Amino acid sequence: MKIVVVGAGKVGYSLAQRLAQDQHDVYVIEKNGDRIKNLENNLDVNLVQGNGSSISLLQEIGIEDMGMLIAVTDSDEVNMLACMLGKAAGIPKTIARVRDTEYENGTNAVIRDRLGIDLFINPEMVTAQEIYKVLKTPAALDVEDFASGAVRLVEFKIRNNLHVTGIPLRKLELPPNVLIVGIMRGSDMIIPHGKSTLEYLDNVFFLGAKESIDKVEVWLNEVSRPTQRVVIIGAGLIGRNLTLLLEADGYDVKVIEKDLDRCEQLAALVSRSIVIHGDGTDVDLLQAEEISDNDVIICLTDDDKLNLLVALLAKHLGVPKTFVRVGRLEYITLMEQVGIDVVFSPRLLTSGQILRLIREGENLINISTFEGSKAEAIEISITNRSNLMNQYLKDLKFPGKSLVGAVVRDNRTIVPKGDTQLLEGDHIVIFTLPEYVNKLLTYVGG
Image: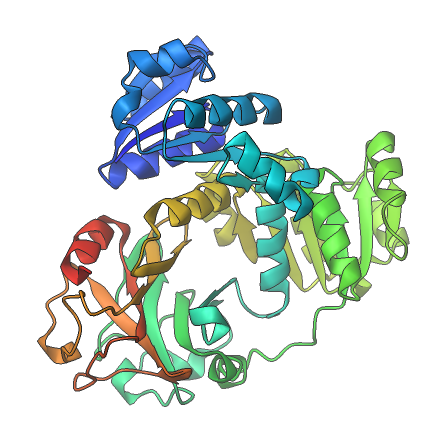
């Protein structure tokens, strides 16, 4: 597909990189010459310096065969205008990055339709929702749901679980209806087989029926007290959205922010949460606020090094779990190595969400990325035009390394075996590596 990305900031860069990997014909429009040069040196995409909301520029690069326009500049207004003009010029689908939560509610869906914008995506809200979801499973590093919530994929790190290490997977007695579909070891993602083993510090991906996945924590001896008391460092848009989500769900939230205006803005929105004007790196302040009595600290400032420092301080003072936001993707592995529990990138979460929307079709229902896009889980519906219908798993020859982890049939989740037959109407969840996704979708067909 020919796709135009307007804006070459962090989200635009990540998005263009992933779209190029998926072999789309990508055009990136950006005003800033320095950003254009950065992409020239790093990405194999078509670069155009100029205004993405210019009809003449869109016509110049060939608007007649464009399949989609995605506007991800730092300006909500520019993004909406680019999408409006693109839709008016005949581009079938448009997506705008919009931070203003006013456009999230149902009333404004009518306005979005009239503007010609198919979807608004709010990076800060996407990030807040992802953090909120992981908080619901205290020991997990990541959580994703499939098949309308019937299937869940969770990621755990092997630390104090040596009773499960060194044993071939075929000999492990996992909870029923649960399968290990991926192992992240160092920088390598492994699609496991029966002889594979779990090792110390592996990140392990478990997939299965939602009610069964809840038993994995017990199986790993990772049962911890439920998360109730949360400290958030930073009251920017992510912090604000997350605070409101957590407060609405009954969490006890304390927010520390250096900027007085941000403190006042957030304080006006909350009823029970505590907003403190102060420096999150101040050890005396952290001790005075009894930081060690909290279950988790979530560091959300724009400074990666500051987030790491505060998280390590909190860990030293006794906070059990740490979340850190990063802007520079190369810091993710380093932060995990020094003991940060959950490291996340808003730009990766946002680009992943957009990619999900681009790829979804009649049979591709859902797609999620993991570990900085080193693995993907895709949910596929078996239609009467699918190459998989009526096939047995043992007879399938998926391209590359892929593993079918779950089959949902008539609201029942099945952990498949070689003699499992795929029927029309089934939903299957496949764990695979990114480089095989396009070939896999072609193989599935339908």
